[in-house]
Length: 549
Image (cartoon, rainbow, N blue to C red; front, side):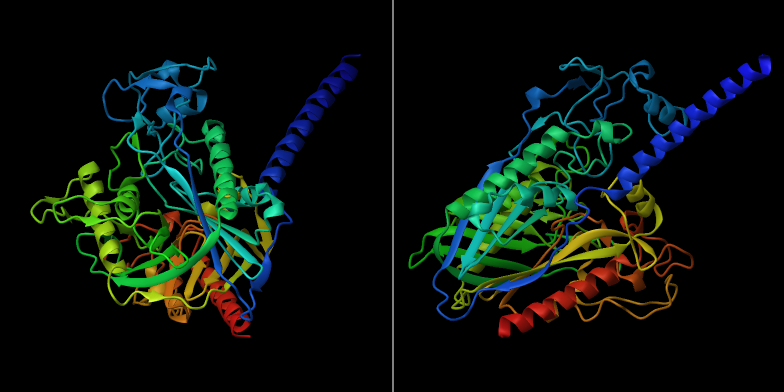
């Protein structure tokens, strides 16, 4: 009798364990599969040169600033702009992190507005986790521009956000009203370090999915849908004027990782109502992290991007100011890998006297004003080119990028960039590259933080590197582009991390530059850059052939 009872108990325990293992297996399987499993793009579409008609352009913007009254507030006892509660107020994961010295105990308290027993603030992204917003300095936006000519319609959105993963971009595309006949939607992020977390990497003392603000993410997606639809519905005939403005980086940006390669081109396109001087939109693109407010800033802000856009639209006041040109300014982030930042830059004030080194809003405003002045003065010079070609074309290709290191396991567990794919004997992540042509303006998109040397040239292969190979990311992407102005949009349709040239991968001693440099820890691995470069180059050449024919 006892043996029979014992067997039943053991059988019950084994059954429970089996069910538990199966549930874990199903959970992990669902995380590794990710959403939009069958979604793939591979197309080129170009309007005919014959009877092209007018170029149609429309713009729209939607405020994506979170309403802080809907979130929990907190009392920052030590005034360090971090949330450090007492141990009793931590959850189990946080207590475990405290035990291993990963986080600190403090005396911060909060108001539980929604009565769920959990601290739910707006978590700000960038720099480090555990930075709850205390207020709003200025609004943040989803700004869209749409182009149509001879049966091809393309819409592009630029977000004041840290980054958006590819699956969310697909969500947005599926939300667009199909009756508008939009052939392709591109969504890029500014990689702004002073905005709400849209990736989940910075939410909480210990970031985890439960802390992620899905409400804000849903609002961002809806804002993108609305902005695209409004831009398409508002399209009118437009003339396009192009200018590449060459700059000296001193006082604007520095490269915090060797080799020093900086994008010295501010690419601009101005769209006027056809036959008039009335500005509809100004497109600017250049690479620099919006983080001048600094890591201690607790206020949501568009950072220098907002001052740049406002200055182009409304003008920059005296001293040494300039009249604005109206319309809507849209800043699309460029190449920020490498790493492009103003954190260690001394920015001159437009008054010609003050020099601002300390991070904060004085620096933010000075940098934005200077960029606006450069843009306004450049667009008023006589060498601005009117594009006589008004055709619109677009190409898109889904690609699979090999993952390595911590990124590979984080993706497998669905912690970042949901969905893993087994391709050619490697675990890969699905992403995307695009080409857009609007007359004499050419745009390529890359799904992360591109090191400028991959587009501008200057990839190195020095003794001491981890891989004894020559530079693989050649020729430079921009030198293969064929527009009169050539824009490279970073963080477009994805945020796959740092795109580091493989011959510059350097995590094992002896180090090329005496010591290890920051970068590789935020990359998906050494094969990310060669794959994205190869696939981008192939799509650009395929598109060029179709454009010519």
